[in-house]
Length: 297
Length: 180
Image (cartoon, rainbow over all chains, first blue to last red; front, side, top):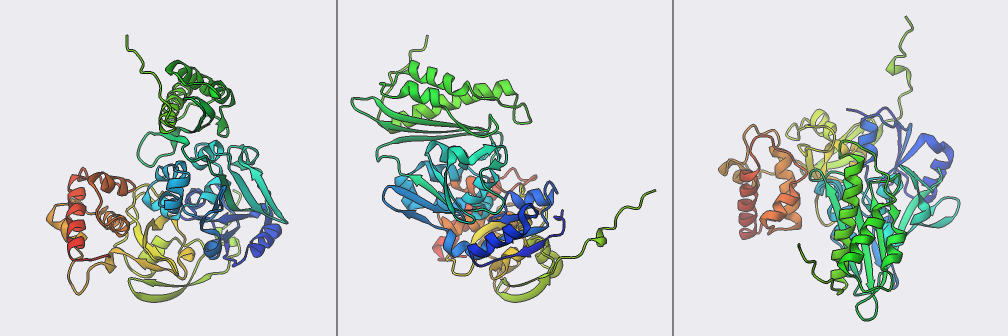
């Protein structure tokens, strides 16, 4: 399979990228790692007449930096580089774990975090993890904009990016040391997109209580969502099995999945609830919060 | 009957000049922007050891190693999901580049000795993926090997002998300090 013909540019500065985008607007597509764009072009789902390859910006846009309260990840950082980052493993372990489950080794070696966020597949993994972490997306167009991920994700394959803007960086506020976290991805076969994916972060409070919890649910609605009601149910409480179960139910409530080859809508909604429960159990336990053992009747 | 527009009617975009090293030899070619790396290797360089299986980045038969300028380690990628233009300035290693002075690479010999193949179609990709894993993790556990080759499909062997082959090669490469 070949993509349709296109003109190829590999500019060496961000300014040139933005200028090319201004000139060609919707005719142009930005190529990062190509692990979503190239398959779509080969299948001729999209056929841009201009491809702007960012490969010459890798030296300036592939990095993981710890700037104290924030982790900054360059848009061209590959999934594999996030997966193998020692700095992230200790500061925000949710990120390398999310990376580990994306595609397969070869896909992770080319695919980038910025590319995945810009593509914004409703079943993708990065948007879910970044939503749970309250990350922001830094974009460059006529100026620089910092967009909280909640406002960045607009719909399936739709983001707040303007046609002449390009993602340069992902900024992740570092969760407090001692926080608990969990990544739950249910996939039909190795390397597949998620049937449902869930990220949870729990910050422990005083005397065995939850100070705050954040839960993001993916692949079951037009964009991943935060389970706000479930988060409020947990805040300030000492967690119990019953509370976790109720929170999981509340978290799955907004899900509006569609039936497809990965399962029926009913199944996916139930799976969302199960994965949120597992995510909370794991995150609470990693935060050092114990649940009473459930009694089996 | 209305005439279908000829695909040749569209103006051809300018070709891209690429210079890259494949298995140690340097090449410069002018290529169509849409040419995929796998087709460049097979059709232009005649290196047909890299196979096209599914052509949709699922099967891994097209796996090769690449190394960009200034990059310390090689990485395994699927050459059916990469443009030849993206490989400009890079080094590429294919299955043809593994044997040295007529002697098989430990991975190639291990696949042979452990019956790690039947039809052999997936083998070049399987070996390059295994090498991509070993350059990063020279002593993988059985689980890590399975995880490492999860992007490669084999329809003959049931994978058991492939895993055995990679285990044997990893051991030998470690003993003989072979890093690639």
